[in-house]
Length: 587
Ligand SMILES: Nc1ncnc2c1ncn2[C@@H]1O[C@H](COP(=O)(O)OP(=O)(O)OP(=O)(O)O)[C@@H](O)[C@H]1O
Ligand SMILES: [Mg+2]
Image (cartoon, rainbow, N blue to C red):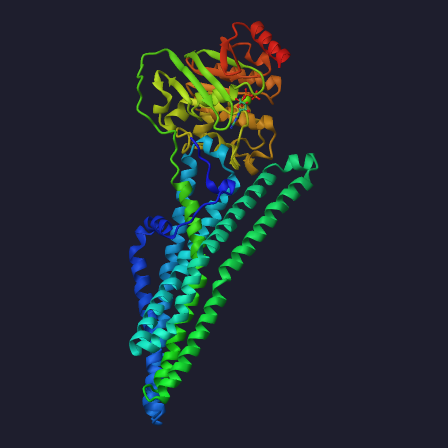
């Protein structure tokens, strides 16, 4: 299955407002009351600001013209009251929506992270972690900013524009219609410019994602960078994405700000129309100075929020692009679902069986082709073969890190796909060729995902380690279980990492233990110790050992040779060596 996200390869993705709003709606489901409060406050706030021109117009016509200072004073007091109501409404609206934005941000980040946990290994092969981090950090925040700030301004501006438009048209329809002509022109311009602004914003988000990927890659590989003195290489690459990010964000900035001057000109045009036409109406005796002032204020009331709408619009477009990028991840479904078992061969002495298994990575050659393999419970199997022959891939299929492209894999007589992840990881211990440790203590690392020991006391854990013969290995670390593992294991040796990965897998007492080059970096004395520990595991534990150092697999019951899509029985160690050397000669 293809898990590649469109942002990862800078594909053009079309953001669509209605589609984005539809995706946004479910996120706001739990926030209906707060949203209703915000909307009513926006209405009150806009109603308040719409009253100003009427009050001022009436004050001019009724009181100022007649020098009625008492009336002027009352009008001023009313204006002040209306202003205060508007202020309070705006404050409550900010509070209500600010909380909504942060809650959406919180739950979206959780949802995205949970989704990433559930997606299969193939997803991570196809997407860059830097871009994913950027989606979790940056894109969700764009949405938060949109809900917390832009949405509030948008609602308020929308009400004020609508209200001012109604006043303009109802007080004097011809004058009102004339004052709205520039608005029609700019709205048309906005519509024409929107796709360009939207594309510029999306490109800017993608550029942030690419930059984040580049930083992540060079930080993760800083030793290689230093050893090969390739600082210039990464510097060039970083410079490349930085320049791209810079120009994308400059373009997005220009695009986003294009509306402000256009709307500014439209507003001035409308004021000029009112002044000209209004003065003409006054001289004709059909209009008053107070009404003209009121009209000028309404025009301002109409165009100012319209300009705000135009400036908010790009940030909404940015948020829509972010919603698209976020929901693209959320919409992914793992194709490694739990399926109904169709074999149910409960009474089998087979630990694992491959039936006509073929496997191909998405963009690669076929690694396994119609392989049949039977592993008996309690036996030790060795997988040997040339570099790139397919051993790790075979082991990954055994642990269901991937599903077979064709054929079936049975674990203890049942379809391996019918086990829940918890049960599967409890039954199968896999020591990866590239051990990975989490930042934390050794204890955190060895109980990770192990429900038996997750909440036990240090004493209980020490007891369990002791009975499995693992305490000696823990004692090799200065502070035992409490030893700190910093920066994901960068501060300990590779062999030490393998030791911890070994303890983590063996402590589970799995039914199937897979060791992929698990002792490749461990000295021979310690290696023997590990072998003794493995031999202490329950008798029916099945072991699969992958090793290039053939002495490691001395005790294997059967040796399989993995190469060129096939897994064949090597028979004896001599035969395995022959196959390996023969392979070397032919390749
Ligand atoms: N994630 C991946 N995506 C695409 N192709 C892959 C991936 N991992 C491995 N391959 C390819 O699959 C083939 C088998 O790789 P695999 O890692 O199984 O070999 P291996 O026998 O474990 O080698 P080694 O002895 O070096 O560990 C190789 O040709 C490799 O290039
Ligand atoms: Mg390998």
